[in-house]
Amino acid sequence: MLLFAFANAGVKIELSLQHAEIGLGILAGLMFGTPLGILMAALIAVKTGIARLPQGVNWRSLLGYGFLAGIGFTMSLFIAMLAFDETALVDAAKRGIIAGSLLAGVAGAVMLRARSLRDVN
Image 1 (cartoon, one colour):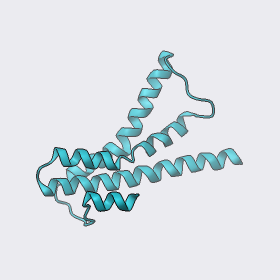
Image 2: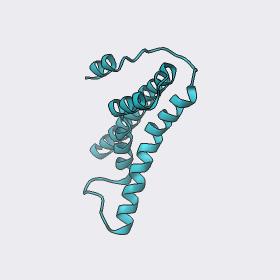
Image 3: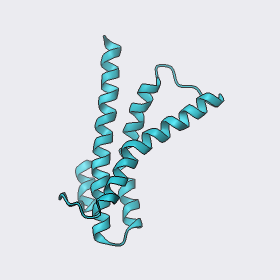
């Protein structure tokens, strides 16, 4: 599935610092913004009594799930292609999307794996 997405997105893997601020902004949004938004929305819902955390879910695991939600590959590529006209800007966005999705996925997997190993022991 990932190779299919890469092929259809026309992603060229090359290192370039051209328009790095766009890529870094997208990376930060996927890596930090998504988990933070999920945690804040859940915190507000729990504190106001609208919701409660499901049984077996704590704030640390919710953060791990938030990181996994940062794997916004397909929709992020679609939005980047709509947002930018210039090829260099789209390429910079694609680099940020790939890096952010990869880092968010790894961070979420590590956090949730550590939790599951801790629960077993």
